[in-house]
Length: 171
Image (spheres, helix red, strand yellow):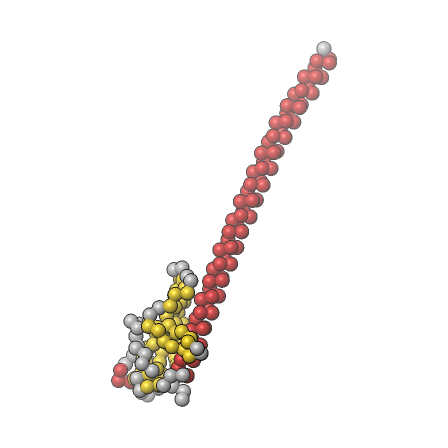
C-alpha cells in the first residue's frame, strides 16, 4: 500500500508540474508577443518620422531653390517702372521658375514635383512716406516701384510651408 501511495503522489506531482509549465509557456508567449508588438510599433513610428523629416527637408530645399531662382531671375531681368519685368502681381497670379540653358524664366501656374507643389507670388509694396517702412497693407499712393514682396509657397501631403521675402532693384 505504501508503494501505491508513492506512485499516486508522483503522478499527481507530474500533473501539477505540467500545469505550471503550461502556464509558464503561455505567459512567456504573451510577454514575447507584447514585446514584438511594441517593437513593431516603434519601427513604424521611426519610419513615419523619417519620411516626415525627409519631406520637410525636401520642402526646405525647394523653398531655398525657388528664392535663388527668383534672385537670379531678378538679376537677369530689366526692372521696369512697374516692377520685375512683366510680372503680374497678386495671389491670383502664381508663377514658378524654370532654368533653360542657364537662364531663369517665369512660367505662369504652379509647379508639381512628386508630392510637392510650388508657386511664387509677386506683390507690389508700399512704404510709409515718413518712416519709409514697408506698409502691412499695400497702398497704391505710396507704391515703392523698386521693391517687390516675394512669397514662395510649398505644399505637400496636407502641409504648407510659406516664406516671404522682399527683393529690391539693386542695379
